[in-house]
Amino acid sequence: MTDIAPPPALVPMCQVRCEVEKLVTLGGGPYGERRYIPLKGGTVRGPELNGTLVDGGVDWQINRGDGVLDISAHYVIQADDGALIEVTSVGMRHAEPAVMERLARGESVDPKEYFFRTLIRFQAGAPAWLHLNKVMAIASGRREARLVILDYFRIT
Image 1 (cartoon, helix red, strand yellow):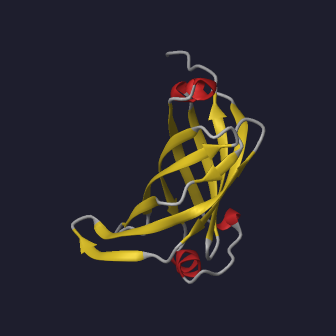
Image 2 (cartoon, helix red, strand yellow):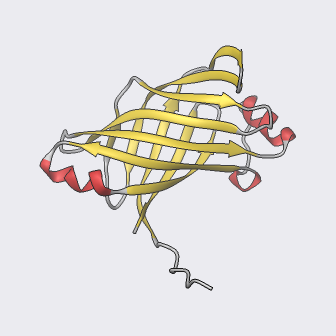
């Protein structure tokens, strides 16, 4: 039997609070309902990264036939020092059908009732932020009617 390495640690990076526009659906496709949500902006606060979200990001989604929501978001963080940091986030959200329906209606749902996780990658050009080009993070998310809250954890 092969020895399995210990799991990587997770270090808190920041909390992203992203304001979202109304969902736009493109209708059914071969893999499910294709849709997107324009991202308006928001705040980034934490021990490793602080700034704001630049308006214009997009969260592309596929609402799969098995009830899982595939997520592929792309947005920009402007750090407090003015540097721009590109963020790519892929993941999924799922729960029992009744819980997913409550989320779709914009109801407040305890995040313990659903799974919402994404893998975060960064691209930065400013010297102070070049280290992010070598970072992967996991986000644990919460969905509210007009807000997405993501807690980023750097994978060590």
